[in-house]
Image (tube, rainbow, N blue to C red; front, side):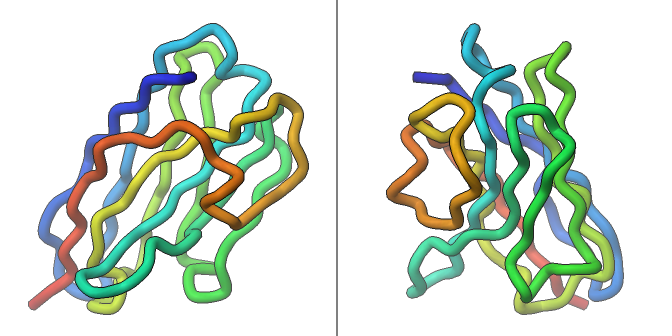
Amino acid sequence: QLQLVESGGGLVQPGGSLKLSCVAAGRTFTTTNMGWFRQAPGKEREFVAGIAWGGMNTYYADSVKGRFIISRDNAKNTVSLQMNDLKPEDTAVYYCAARRVPYSSPSSSRADYGSWGQGTQVTVSS
């Protein structure tokens, strides 16, 4: 199981940008698909973006397509989420997550992710 630590959250005005980072501790990172989820108060944790183990294939929730970019640096065991054109509805706690199976196929289901970070708060408000 990977140990994950997120950072980069904060308060941003609508239309602004933030970059979230996740540092993973573990030798399996380079073969593990990664993802970002978010959870707003009173709502279920929802998928935001995913990236394949090789970093070439990415996929996004419809609500963030064209605004968010997920990337990874396997040499540094990190995965990032560049968040642009932020909206108030993006306000949530954002979680970094790792799949339980190496070389796995794309998934937006939280049940397929076995490692989770502690979360970082993103607040979009004027």
